[in-house]
Every structure is written in structure tokens, then in C-alpha cells.
Image (cartoon, rainbow, N blue to C red; front, side):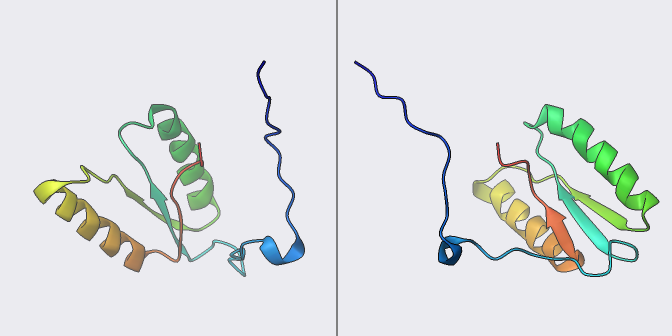
Length: 96
């Protein structure tokens, strides 16, 4: 016998995470897009989003983090910290 779990979830009003709103649109904003070399199909998505965001007047900063450990990991953390200081908002993945 197997048990099939329901993949849906319902939230009570108090359980919802706060959302972020970029008031006034993206024109004049710096939008960060984070890529990873392993997310090959996401490269196409980011290319499309970058074109659309720039057409709407945003400046786009794409970051490609490196390794997560050792000296390269330290550089990755520094790069991500710098990138997060330079953007007004960021998209870091598709949640998959």
C-alpha cells in the first residue's frame, strides 16, 4: 500500500509570508538577476527578462555565483553581498 500526499497547501491569513512591492514600476530601478551555471534552461528565461526589463527602463545586473566552499566560496559570498547592495530588487531563481 502507498500513501499519496496532497501537494497543495492552504494558509491562514496569519501564516502568509510578507510580499515585496516595487512601487512605481521598474523604470530607473536596478534589477538583479542571479544565474547559476547549472540552471541551463533558466539562462533563456533571464535573457528574455533582461530584454523586457531594459525595455521598461530598468538597469539589469546579472550575477553568476561560483563555488560555495573554500576560497572560491568566499569570493562567491563577497560577489553576492556586493550584488545585493547594488540592486533595488532581485530575482534569484524559479523555486524549482
